[in-house]
Image 1 (cartoon, rainbow, N blue to C red):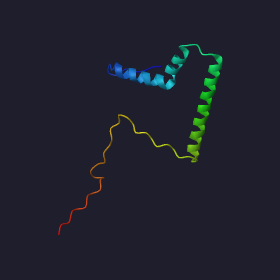
Image 2 (cartoon, one colour):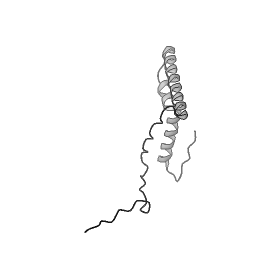
Image 3 (cartoon, helix red, strand yellow):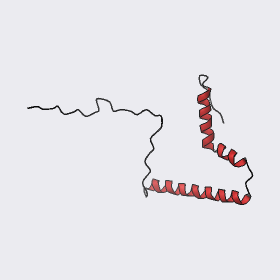
Image 4 (cartoon, rainbow, N blue to C red):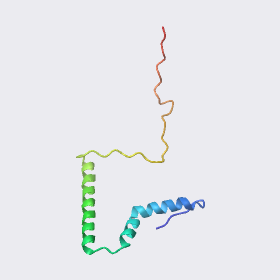
Length: 98
C-alpha cells in the first residue's frame, strides 16, 4: 500500500493511509488475529459474512432492476453547500401599493 506525501503534509497522508487500510479491512483482520478463534466460531463468522454479502448483492440487483427504491444519498460531511446563483433565483414580485 502506497500513499504520496504532498508538500510535506504528513498528517493528510496519514489520514489517507488510515482510510485505505479501513477500506481494505486491515484493522478488522488485525483485531481478529489478536486472539485465537475456534474453528467453529470461525466457520459461523464466515457463514454470516457470506450471508451479508449475498443479501447486499441481492439488494443491489433489485435496485438496479427497479424492484425496490434506491436509498436516499447521505449528505456529505465537510463539503461546502452550494448556494444558488443570484441570476438563477426567481425574482420576487414587486409589491403593489394602492
